[in-house]
Image (cartoon, rainbow, N blue to C red; front, side, top):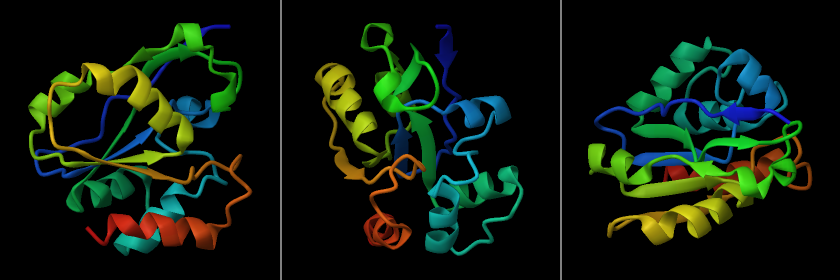
Length: 166
């Protein structure tokens, strides 16, 4: 199994919300784009919540998130994983991103939304204990992954709507 690496954060100085995934899937890594799998609900949800056309080119979709003060990143900097499923991540291989440096550079960031359970669990177990004291609201949302088929798009939309309500 080879080591895979996440992407740099998508963030601006006025970002207030951070959406964290665990590690990009195979399709996203190949495309070098966050949430590139065509059945992932992330971009349709963001388009609906933030009022843009989900078929915009990737760079323009990223621009819409930035304008809305939304940043994207992953909890993991690197890991070993076969395929795309979080359940296939080799636990002994986990290397997290440097969140102390990230939050030092972005002191206005005050809310972290986890795109699924794995991102939240890894963050709480491996990042939070070493995070310098900081007021952060931590919120887990249902994964937008096509593997999370037990939660409908409508249910995801209702829960992800909390992004707009804060």
